[in-house]
Image (cartoon, one colour):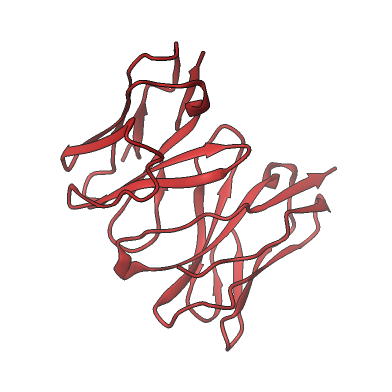
Length: 112
Length: 111
């Protein structure tokens, strides 16, 4: 298996632009998680899905952030409009329902 | 979700055994204890998971006392490549795998 695949690996954008991060979970995994990691705040859970349904989005910082999972093999995290404080590494992870999560390589986002 | 407390950093030398202890006083009956490893510029990677007593795999051992209020990750004979951040988490698999990461322990292995 190729593992959790995230794209792009790096994204540089200007403040105010829309940013879309993509994630392909491991086939057969029914839970998907989006995290954000910064030096100041560490690794934060933003939102997670079970069977494509958002279960807990309490970690989403504000309305500028949205996440979708249209099917079992694809999810997006969108930031609109982006701000410099959104600069971070965004990770996607998936699991089969227990709590052993498998993480992607992450997307490093820089908002100028 | 139970909160965990672990040392912020540890230093070691190659070939030594490293033990990282994590406190989780409010662990619930259904919670499992899971450890992850994170290298710079990579996502966290699962190392080991346990519920009670001792678990061992090819990478590490996990010791859990009877009261389960703490756990110790043991890395035998560390090498420079074990330099990483190690996270201890507790969580109930019935919650769909939701985990809360703390600050982790930054392990530095020196030659």
